[in-house]
Amino acid sequence: MSDLHDPHQNHLLDALTEAEYECLSPHLELIEMPLGKVLYESGQKLKHVYFPTTSIMSLLYVMEDGASAEIAVVGNEGILGISLFLGGETTPSWAVVLNAGYGYRLKAQFLKDEFNRAGPMQRLLLRYTQALITQMAQTAVCNRHHSVDQHLCRWLLLSLDRLSSEELTMTQGLIANMLGVRRESVTEAAGKLHRLGLINYSRGHIKVLDRPGLEALVCECYPVVKAEFDRLLPSLHGIASDVAKTAHSRVTFNVKAIAASAVR
Image 1 (cartoon, helix red, strand yellow):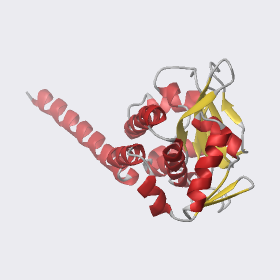
Image 2 (cartoon, one colour; image 1 turned 180 degrees about the vertical axis):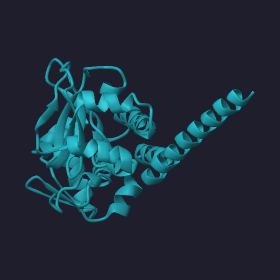
Image 3 (tube, helix red, strand yellow; image 1 turned 120 degrees about the vertical axis):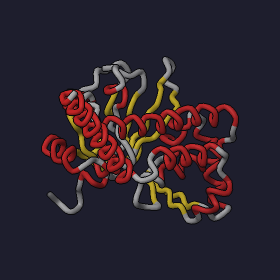
């Protein structure tokens, strides 16, 4: 495998036990994810789940009049397609590539089978899902109560957390669609951040110059989401290890109980 592309670049895949990873890895398919590519459409049956590595996905709702708003972002920290293992085959939201890059996809049925084994992977995915739900809920609150400047700061920080670079390739029009605001509002907000020396923005490229400055300006929504991810997934390797130990202890206890019953 190329050194440039490795499933372990995705934190969830990297957190799997060795046995689980060996089971999954032959079925992972490396794919390119160009900017703007639609991975899921509303109501479409999910055939794959996706594990981004160097790309970022946007989950958004599109209204009948064409207006849209982002509800969450998914990058190398997670998985795209949680509705599949939560019992649904479709989702009312869309999934669009927000930042171009690569990722791995896995056939839907294979993931469902592995999830239903109720092993370490199941608990890991459920923890991630709770963190993602927190991001969705906080996004709704943020869109209702905070300014466009704060929305943009939150969006930039969430994106940076999922990239190995301080740069994003993104047009103002696309940002406006993600945030559910007018393009002029994004232009004004980006201009303020530029004048403060926090970002450079030119021809669809955003470079963050002062991350602590963005963190000082952002609303409470970003730290709430980050804290929940850190609480639920503080050490992905540690979680997988703890889950495996718990499963082993449970099996050991059951075997001892059965043996004791047999003796009696």
